[in-house]
Each structure stands twice: as structure tokens, then as C-alpha cells.
Length: 370
Ligand code: MG
Image (cartoon, rainbow, N blue to C red):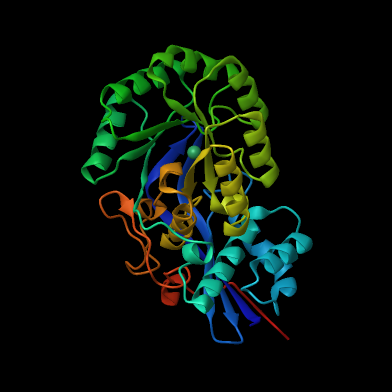
């Protein structure tokens, strides 16, 4: 089987509500999504998506994905997409780094490999759990009252996992954490996501003021060095998200004991092939995981669900469904959707959901084997 054509689409995915991170430092209204269709000489077609969370969140850029694919395409045409390691190495040779540009290609290859094998991607990767994965809410509220209202809205829809966005104002963060903990149900999974919004000193202030509550903080500083410095002074459980990009980051976090949880975002780390290695490092070191798309449509959420299904139930905290935050549905209601705050793995071979091409507009680029 050979890749014969790579077709690239650019779609803007508007967010239902403007979204702020890092204590209001970063604002997001529309996500720049790239969809990729890989066609083969055997008639099997695979789809991938790369949707960074804007271009201010982490070093990932929507137009950069499309430029990256233009650069890599001549090295990919003619390869067997089922040999995902060959494709990964070809991409890494053609364009070192730029992991976010590679994830849609990797995803489309896994989609084809799954269809060719007659297996959902998770089963092709070695076996997927059918336990529905809880979807983490994304609570971007600012005040105590707003936080309570947003969480109650999610609870009414069945959510048991919550990512409460904090960072920026120490006194307000402490007040919000105390209120959320006072109202938390015993079975709820809650993490406080700083999204890099604290200095080292601010992190220690909040951790010390809330240490009786034993809550978990995600990405409480900008870098792994910041987190290492904070960890040396406080024992609060930590999840690393934005600073987990490469396999080397994963090995450092594991070896140095910098976190209890990996937040693995597939677009950021370069797709399923690279993320699966991070999963194994996490499992080997007693580290649990949140698995998420960086953003995007049901395709990106589904990719994340496949990886999440390959993690033992006890070690997979939650997934995320960005699809619930955007106003455009490029797959007409198909694919894993939010059912009572959970996503269910489909038995369809491959990714299990393809977009409506009509919903994607005209391609912005087509690369073909000569
Ligand atoms: Mg996070």
C-alpha cells in the first residue's frame, strides 16, 4: 500500500464562548484547524486533524502545520502508511522538530492502518479498554461564584472530571480552590490548571495556603526547571502539561519525579506514535495520565480517546471533548460524542469517524505522487 495523494484543508472552528487562560493573559475565540486526507493506491483513505489552541498558547501554529506538510509531502508520497514508524522517521528527517505539524499525518496513517487491519486504532495499538472515559470540563471562570455556576452546569451534564483554570491572582486562586473543594463530591476528579500562570513564588504561596486540601496543580510554572524548583520546596501533587513536549521531557519528568500525572496533548507531542512512548514511560514510573487533543473537532477528540483506551482504566484520569466548545460540526454528529460526561470508544475500524468533505470547503493544497 502506498500514499498516492495528500489533500489539505483549512477550517476555522469558532469557539462558542471566548476563552481565557493564565488569569486572563491569553484570549481565544477561533481555532485554526488543518484537516488532512491521505489516499492510497489500494483505495483506503485516512484522515487526520491538527488544531493548535491558537498560536499564543504553546509553540504551535495553524499555518505552520500547512507549511510543514508542504515541506514533508515529497518525503511521504509513496510510503506505506501502515508502517507508521517509517512515516514518523521520514517526517523527522524531512523536518526536525515541529511536532505539531506531524500529528495530523501520523493520525491519518493510524486511521489507514486500522482500516486495513479491520481494527479500531486502540486495538491495533495493542488493545483498547471499553470503559467509557470521563470527559474533563474546562472551567475558565474567574470568580468564586462564576466557578461554582460553571461547574454546576457541567455536573448537570454528567461530568465527574473538572479542570479548573487558575493562575494569575494568588488570593483569588486560593478562594476559588477552597470553595470548589468545599462543594466537591467524593467521586469527582478535580485538578487546578495553572497553565503556567504563576511565578515560582506565587506557586508556593498557593500551595502552602491550600496544603490541608491535598489538591493537584497542573503546570504550576512555565518550565520543567520552574516545576523542579517548586517541587523541591513543596509536596503538592503536580501534573505536567505544556512542558511535556518531547520524549526527553517525559524521561526527565519521570526520572526526576517532577509529576504524578502527565497531561498528554496529541497535537503538541506529535501524534499517537510519539505519545504511546510517553504513555509507557508514565506507566513504568507510576505516573497517571490525562489524554487530550490540543483542541479541535470530534476527529481530534477521537484520536485522544483511542490512546486513552490503551491505558489501564486505573491510570487514565480523563479525556477532553473540545467538540463541545466549538460551534461547527464537521462530522454531522458522527463519532464519539458526549454521553453523560463520558466518551465511548467505537468498534469501527481505524479512527472511526471521518469528516463531511463538504463541511471543509475547498482544499488549500493537494500533493500527488508523480
Ligand atoms: Mg492543562
